[in-house]
Image (cartoon, rainbow, N blue to C red; front, side, top):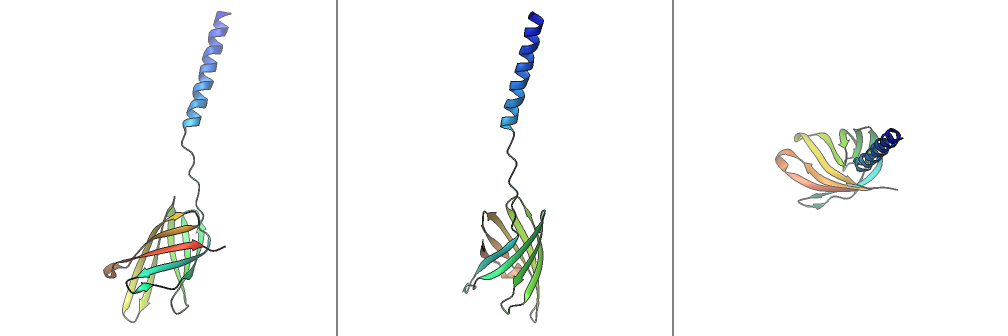
Length: 132
């Protein structure tokens, strides 16, 4: 009888310890999905640019982005998202030469914001809100 009680005690302790460790396991981070159309503004040294639509297509951590140029042309980019960090690169050809702009930021629910790094031209703040 004593052996059975001892064995049950060990089983009970094992169950309690296992359930305690499960309760302390870190919660799985919620996956962020930025797919859809976002309204974006960029602050330049000359003032804020008018809002423009940016479309994100997300597959896992990979992003395909379509932005509109000031002339209304589609500009296609690629990027990535990992947890709440988002980054994409836009390459532009103009009569003044080629330019690469790297957008880096953080996603917080239905908003995101960050900096657009433009090489020798410095960086500019940007922000976006998901359109309904």
